[in-house]
Length: 142
Image (cartoon, rainbow, N blue to C red):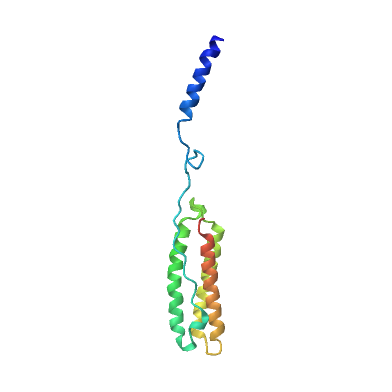
């Protein structure tokens, strides 16, 4: 009985002191999230209908401008490859490199295009740049 008499106040004191802390909305769990900075998304490629056959060099220049932005993002992703301890899949990087080669091949076709083949060439270039941009975006760490 004597021990019970001492135990009850001790228990009440421990409960009172332990409950004195206010818990945050997260239930007392501290925030351990990691903030990852990703570069801004590249604008969608210039639509094929925007350039006529006579404006093909302007079209090529606009694509090269988009590629400059994408190449910067690709370099950043390469630095974050899993093989280097990062979060970006090596397989995704290989896909990006293949997409980039396809863009280069399609860009070379601009100079060889004729007025009859221009629409098809524009479409292939735009599609390859779009595929590259999607591959880059898909590889970005979440």
